[in-house]
Image (cartoon, rainbow, N blue to C red; front, side):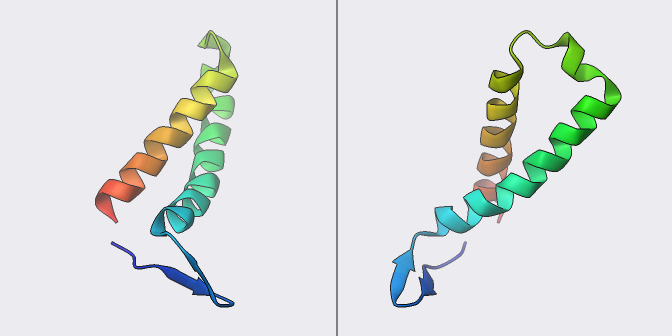
Length: 64
C-alpha cells in the first residue's frame, strides 16, 4: 500500500496514483480488445471500457 503522495506541498491520496496507473493499463487492454475483434461483440462499448477501467483499478488497489 502506498502512503500519501507529497507533490509541491500538497498531499494526494494513494488512489490518485492507482487511478493514474490504471489508465495506460486500460488503454493497452482496450487496444487488445479492438485488435482481436471483440469490440464488435459488445452491446455498449463505452460501458465496457469503463467497466474495464474499474476492474483494473480495483485489482491495482487490491494487490499493490
